[in-house]
Length: 180
Image (cartoon, rainbow, N blue to C red):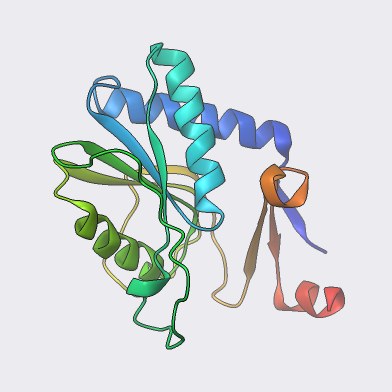
């Protein structure tokens, strides 16, 4: 049976805490921008930017990055690049956001994509869920929840933008077989 790790209220609390931690870690909003990794990292990034904007009273810019072209494990041609970063990142403090940190491969690809946009002052990484099992030496600066998982487990993040609800669930291989 799938285990609910975060319901909608839990996600709101977790994102609020993350927003405050990011602001505290950066001494406020000055020079701060947020970039979400497509697909599900972007809605999380938008929520974080909105929450930080509310706290600081100044707009925190938010963009989205399509990391597929920089993946070392995807062989298909990418027809459309969904990257939209409508601000300069040179000398800015970039907070890169994804919904789940697992092997580290998506973050590695996203870092390459960020560097093609310019030269940030610093790049930090924030994730809603860190489930472990890294294949690369990558870690998050800001973590919503660290979850102990088996490598074969699945983390399902539902976001209002895509699914009409906010939640995070842990599913085993057995749970996934029952869903299929």
